[in-house]
Image (tube, rainbow, N blue to C red; front, top):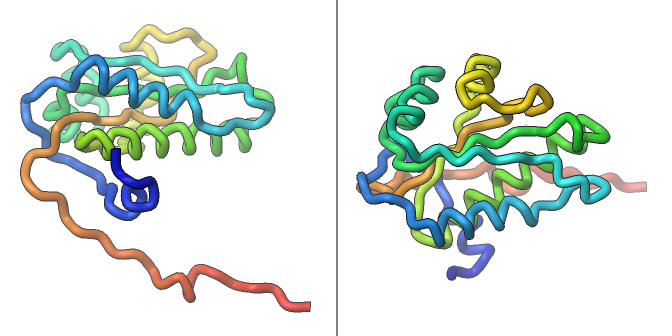
Length: 169
């Protein structure tokens, strides 16, 4: 596994995948990384639906304008906020974000690519019905996972001097 700071700097959203399946071992590693994200009161409000079957992956992909990306990924992981486990929506949304980030970093460290699909939330209720999740589950994102095809674009970031402000007394 690579150094954590290196993984943070080098991870990119991958939108093109090979047909190679994601191993069960790698899937479990990714899910474990998500499970260990921080959450308020350690309530762990995230829930996962692993989507590997091609017909269901295509049906989920139809719910977003980025369908080609989801269709190409051999694995999708739908991430939900479980309202029954929630105690503070803002904190729980932050926790689910940390969970997703952990999953992406774990996948990257394993040589896999991911992209966090958020636009699909425009049809959240349809995805929830399709996946037959409990009423208390609210879709937060679908993570497309697979072996990257080709090279991934480099990315830039704003200079730290533009992002950090110090308060002086």
